Length: 272
Image (cartoon, rainbow, N blue to C red):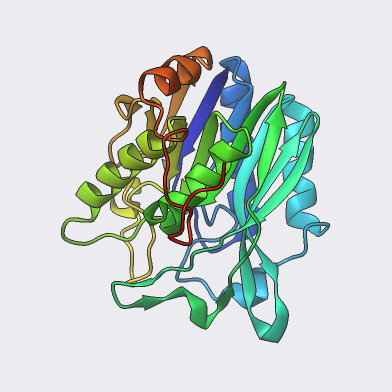
């Protein structure tokens, strides 16, 4: 399966960001990708008031993404914001395209490093996978990468690939943590991990003006053995990767960590 990771820098205007998504999706289609993945907050960058830009999944922005998927023949996965109770929003991934229509609301909110995503965002509660041409793929968002149980849940649901969409916060040691965590999650669940982040705004010519997590780049495709197969640096770019899905079975035979588990996510004995 060929996938395209589009490492972009989005701005505060959803309409302008749609134009960027269309351009990048056309590039991915010309390169014969099956799936194109955009970062978290593709609809509008963090640091933007989220309430006014949030739209339901049948609203104009998501409808336009569906049209991009239809026009290119790709499965498109992109981060957006949808309305939630009590004036909050959900940090939502939309996955749409041939045979695919799903959404995932970020479960683990980024209440760390002095940022409180939960002030404005409501958490999701459901693990979500999609099927693309018979291949099961799990969906995850940014801070989710610090919680291995989600990626093991993808594997338990039959996924051989996890897509991780991010807008990673900058700071001392944060790139090293991103690289360590993405590799660890692939190895924890012995699956392909395709991690796409927002490019560093400074590398795009628009330095960040707030402390919001607006991205550092370093998108990567990581094999089920935890090795980095392809990666980008901090600037905008597109990464094209051909995933050997049969490799998941061979790695799981060699490193059967899923089969050998003795503890459940709650800390008790694993069920048979």
